[in-house]
Length: 551
Ligand SMILES: [Zn+2]
Image (cartoon, rainbow, N blue to C red; front, side):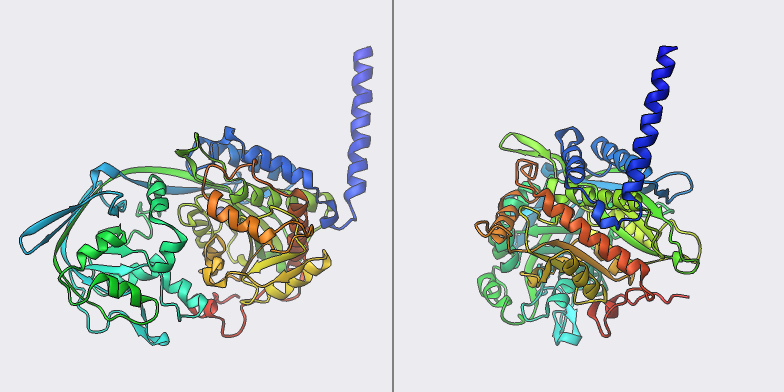
């Protein structure tokens, strides 16, 4: 009797509290509901050692995905799939077996064997567990054909049946966007195949060597690679005609150029300033690789907030962040767990808090919203690519914009934000006004030459013709004794993709809440606007990846 009475009283209190919270939230603007501590709680869980670095297709990742799905349910969001928040991404994993590779040069009857890691790094081969390639070589500059920029590394060169020896990157005089586009391995490999090459040796350009020292590449070479697999079982983006793709460092590359019409040192010191015409290299190069292949899968976690407008609800704004990181790997200072707190547990934390705040406010924007926690970003934007190419939407519905969150670098609260991609579409002006409403100004990207705009999941949407933008911290700290730019530099140099990217590093959760508020205002603004976001007239990305015609 007493027990029952007490239960009833507790129930009554809960109902009172429940209505109290709802009354508090309803009617208030969503962004006023954002709490720094809520973001903190997500990051503390997702970046804990318990989740073992959330590598795609690992148990730690699956726990993180279950956590995100539970939060989506809690926030009243609808599953995107028929009965689940999960979109399964079929994957092929390829791990280069490092002692199982070799590289040998035979020239004038003499043979020279190169050493793994001292001289070269092998590629994983998605097509075969063991592969060998023997071919003559041709130096082909950067391996870029860009007639619109007056540059053609293939002019007067015959690459048929040959291994192309090229520098990474692109000429310094290319405008930033073009430089990024032509530097990407996807663009280069397609072009090399078109010109008949059967393999490639890549040498770091002087700029890439400065950014990523050889030792760092060797230390990262344990990471397995992945591709997503289509319904017929074919792995995407494998470039199988280009059988093997090895990286050589400068000393090893210099040996490939011995006896050629021009020495390596002269080529290397000129490559940044001028076009160096290609030429054949002497001898025959034999490359062999052993690859561990494994079919596996991982999930994107996708939720929907249906729009309120009968017509516009068929247009979806995608709010995305990658949930995966690097998992377990080689230990650094005794720590083998790559927690990825800044990259990108905090992006997910911000996204989840945006969903909670929206739910509390009962906001029903006119367009539909999709919340997408995507997998395998660290493997080459795979989860987002899979989702953007085949979104689980009803026929006739479509994606119209992407707001991505990745590594926002919230080491301290800043007075400014950086909006990657602001110059490309109408999302720029919308972001500027959302930021201003929260007391932030937008600063120009301090390193436009890095073209960070194509280095994360937003690029998967851009490739489908969908305008995208990414907001992150600026470089002017609110506390003028703190150097925000220096904190970012230190992170990039010492902690990026290292086990030390965990919560022992500073993370400012008030800054995270500020960013969540700005992103929320931006999302609601474009979701309620009469016209959907659009690329600017004549924009480079719109030209390369034309927007799909919409009904
Ligand atoms: Zn990231």
